[in-house]
Image (cartoon, rainbow, N blue to C red; front, side, top):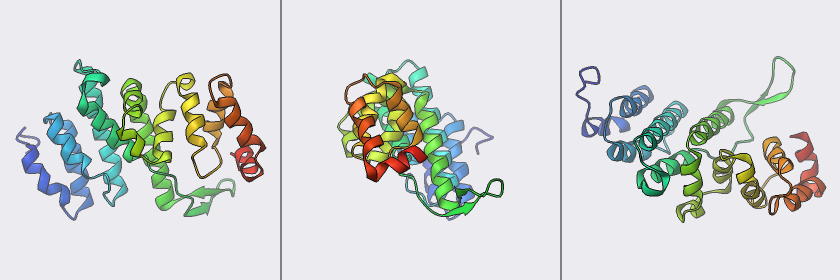
Amino acid sequence: LEGLHAVEVATLKPLLADASRDLRREVVRAHRDAGLPFADSLASVGALVDDGDPEVRAEIIRTVGTMLNQEIAGGKTAADSPLAMRAVEVLLKLARAPLAEPTMKSTQNGKSIKTGAAYEREFERYLARLEMEKQPAAVAKFLESQAAKTQPVENLLVATLALEPKASASQVAQLISRADRAPGREELLRLAQFPEEPGVSAALTAALENPATQKAAFAS
């Protein structure tokens, strides 16, 4: 059907619930490549954010990112496109908190590295941020919205790190104070680069002086 340009959202919708992860993944991709209406495609694909398969979730991120880019490239701005805001929300929801386990020893240096579900989670966070970095204005607009206030801190951190570094330093500082962990290397770097921004110096000092987070902060 896709090769014959006969794909329709209504035709694809029941296939998104198929037991085959390979079929679900390809149906998600078809929403991206077949030139289907953005609103209908986003509604269908966005409903799969909790799909149990990492390959399907990764394809959702790529597909929604492409839809977002096309919406903005078509002349829409973040301020006047509810669909762009919905696309950012889907990407943000897929940037879930990192998992500490499972891990394994690296065969190269013997260090502990993430594997299985923990590795897949890191990859999804990377993909979601990559797509959000392409449309920072839309991401910034969403982060100002009421919808953003209901999102988990870890998801918000991924979206905030996708913004221009100086403009996001204060937001990173605020979010780190709410996170239930020590700041990571990149978060510390973002703070250290712009200590003059509101709230940043205090957050950086707290991270480096607090015994509960100091060791983890330096190790990152």
